[in-house]
Length: 317
Image (spheres, rainbow, N blue to C red):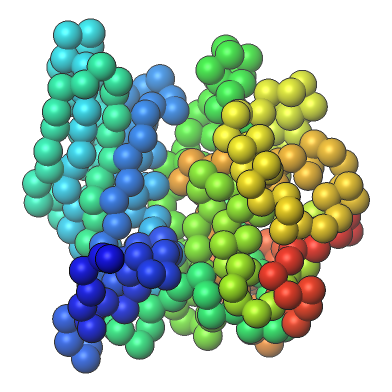
């Protein structure tokens, strides 16, 4: 049995993107932690991507990140300390962009390089967004294109041109800050960020136990065109197959789109976009506002339906 506290608003009993602890009637803390191995060769950009990824969970909960602490596992005997410094500098640059203060951290010597952050954010207790407040009629908005998992596999195989490497690196390093700021002005019901479980994996987390289902329009989902090309070559990461094996049982209609598109819906993303569930009325306005504020994309990709309960229906169009 885990320790309990009446002020825990979101904890392990209803796993979400982050934990939330009520401090007062006006303030709650959002707490999250994330770290991973390098997904790009450049240590500075790795630091930026890892920081953006860690901050994203706070944005997905509707909060504002305030402080962060570094986490580093570093192979001291195999790598020069300049790599260590570049990673930290990249992370700090992203924190500075987000207006977040670095207040500490911890590093250990390890055979495998890993970096990330623990992040604390603020939010009003009544404005916390979780995955589990879906309502029938809600529209689903996605704020970054899919396909970074497949393209990262191509990068590791030295098959991606420099222009694509730079474009995807910048996409992964882009904060979800602006998307969170814009959606805070609308009556959003639920939100999550798309990361390692892929689009359908994270949507399945939202739908599971909600009492409702979802319809997804595959043709409306933004996908990096190079990901389709590399996907057709079979360059899917192992995580995509694990995601599909785990969640395909909740999904109907996977045979409707092209096979590569269906598989890309399970592609694990690094620092992906937000998936926002908002009432149909303001959905178009929210999508337009996101684009006007410079968010990468704001695609209306589906809706929440009364049934089939607990299932996702994928339609080609």
